[in-house]
Length: 151
Image 1 (cartoon, one colour):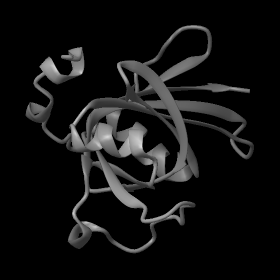
Image 2 (tube, helix red, strand yellow):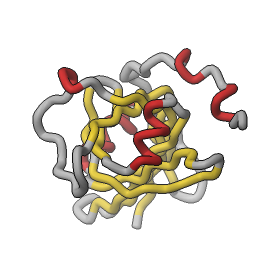
Image 3 (spheres, one colour):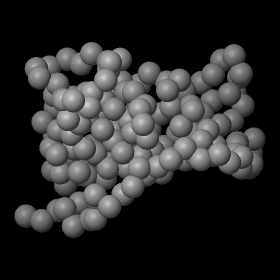
């Protein structure tokens, strides 16, 4: 059975480079974050949500992560997450948080494609994961969008 994701040109997505650019003003006290702002906000959070395709349906998984070289790295031993990475599926990663010191909340959404990371590519600082034989997975960032607003 052919899935829509199998028909998409997934491997042609190039990694995103950090760009400078001012954040755009938005309405109702919200501020759109530039791509560079989004990439700066990501490492300040601990947990993110991976949204991917499992058995032809959307699935969501909470995970710890690390931002490295234009990609988001995380670890999993879940078969459906590993399969999505092995097939190079397009995925979304969402992170949001409240900054109590600045009295602002922010949200960042990243789009990219999943890859199984080679063992030689894995660096220190990866969070621990439950389960047997966890594999490091890389979400290569193609685009990042976000916003922030006062709380």
